Length: 312
Ligand code: MLT
Image (cartoon, rainbow, N blue to C red; front, side):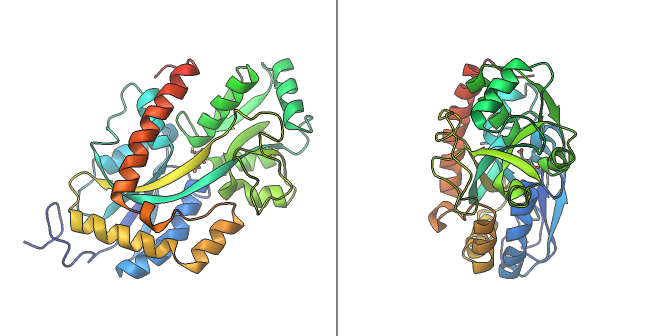
């Protein structure tokens, strides 16, 4: 029938607005990456892309909504490493990452930074470990909910430091960072796509970046390895998803538009400014994305089990 709805061919796709669901608050890192690629993707597709924030439960509420959306190419999900951790952290997840979505392609892999409110006493990452061990029942660690990248990095930090801290969940690390700058919460692990501006602006204290190499746009920030916590390494991969059953030629059109956005100089420059970079074109494809998700599901199930964290 060539119309919209499930099974319609891609011939006239897209002929209406496309919704990109961000499963975290506006103004956070996931939202930032989505809005960066939405414009060039819209130009390539010849349709308007509307970004919709659907918050809650570490990104699983938004992901669940997209899993149940019409498989017609007009609802797309931007998600990150949280897609690979949720099955090990949520008993009643309501969707199966590998079965309930079509993978469109990988987007970017973002370093994380360990940041604190400006007047938090520890000066270095080692001081931070010492401080949190001595004040475990007082220190507050912000994140964007169970399964969020900030939660996972916080988990890795607590395992490395041998401590269990009070976690303060937000609906995204956009609002969490606002509270950190305001001094309402002590520290957090968050992506450079969110923290770069506040670090460069001296509004937060930054201890380290969680990648093997320093980030060019934050040259003075040591790596966790340099700062004495080599086991704390994590970077946040992002991918685009459509509901299972979205026609393959529609998925291909979305993947082509994603590749065009990742080759757009403005996107490359903006990502570089925020400490990250687009994936290579061959990774902005459904197969590369599925391979990544399969590998990450296994990796994080083990990390979470080793950290002694139970699904809830
Ligand atoms: C996360 O911690 O998973 C993300 O940074 C949340 C967000 O994008 O707000």
